[in-house]
Amino acid sequence: MHKHNLQPKHELVYLTEDASHDGVIELINAEAFGPGRHARAAARIREQGPHDRSLSFVCTDDGETIASVRMTPVLAGGVKGHLLGPLAVRPSHKNQGIGRELVRIAIEAARRKGSEAVILVGDPPYYCPLGFEKVAYNALEFPGPVDPARVLVVPIAEDVHSRLKGTIGWRD
Ligand SMILES: CC(C)(COP(=O)(O)OP(=O)(O)OC[C@H]1O[C@@H](n2cnc3c(N)ncnc32)[C@H](O)[C@@H]1OP(=O)(O)O)[C@@H](O)C(=O)NCCC(=O)NCCS
Image (cartoon, rainbow, N blue to C red; front, side, top):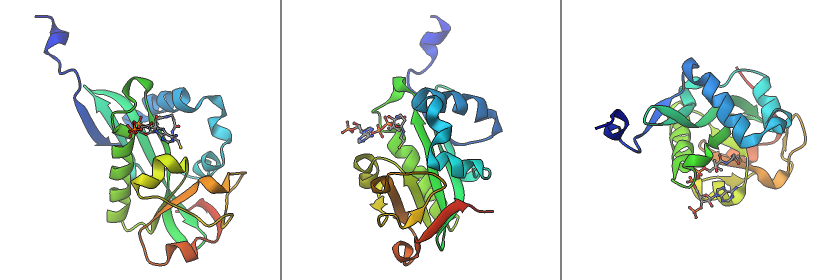
């Protein structure tokens, strides 16, 4: 039998990100979002400081990294939370629940770490079934233009919605 026939066809494993994943994550994000990705308002926050690897995850299929989610610590008005993103799944692996599982794992990890909220800019039809709610229109000021209808939050602490007022930026 040929060696590759012995390999399982789909062996999905979810791992905490480490530095060895950086190169392939860059490729996955370039493929998913294209060259304009660095101009997005959420990307500008991520340029302000490093993401938190302990809350960032990859999915591997038979050892090959095929999806990634990152989390960056932010102060959003009065809320010490995390910005979720980028989330990207390679086209070959879409619609298998991998994106949804990465979001679930990242939220759970943030909760365990004491984060007050998980915030992102994304499509409500995808994220609202995963526990996200709309942030009040223009309550958060991003370092660049965002569509206010796409600013979403999973509240973890008390009174998150009332405290999500002001600027959002990277925090230590
Ligand atoms: C969006 C993305 C992360 C979803 O990951 P995935 O593993 O394919 O998604 P899942 O398998 O968890 O969920 C698939 C479901 O979400 C739906 N979906 C995917 N993108 C969606 C969107 N933008 N809006 C609404 N629904 C969406 C699919 O139609 C599918 O629905 P179904 O279960 O009823 O068939 C992935 O397609 C991707 O990397 N896209 C390009 C980058 C991107 O847009 N990232 C999100 C940034 S906001």
